[in-house]
Length: 70
Image (cartoon, rainbow, N blue to C red; front, side, top):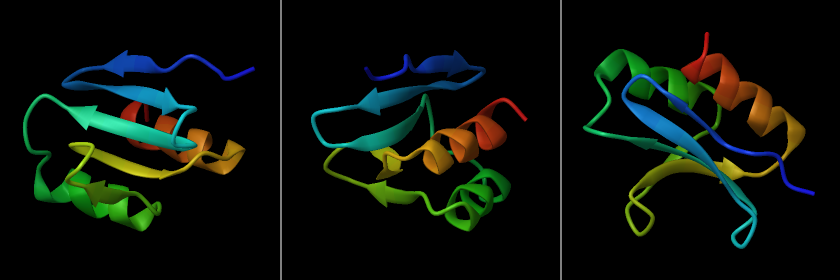
């Protein structure tokens, strides 16, 4: 059973079970600091999805929370 995603100020986290990805969607382009955090935690920009994403794992969920919730 897949966990639910969540929203945060400026975007949302989606658990895409079809693609087996944790996706982070932003309302606008994230600033340089946020992009560095995303890259540092293994997220990559996927133009086809218009999302920052990485393979769905427990670690990916943890990292998504760390980046978006703090």
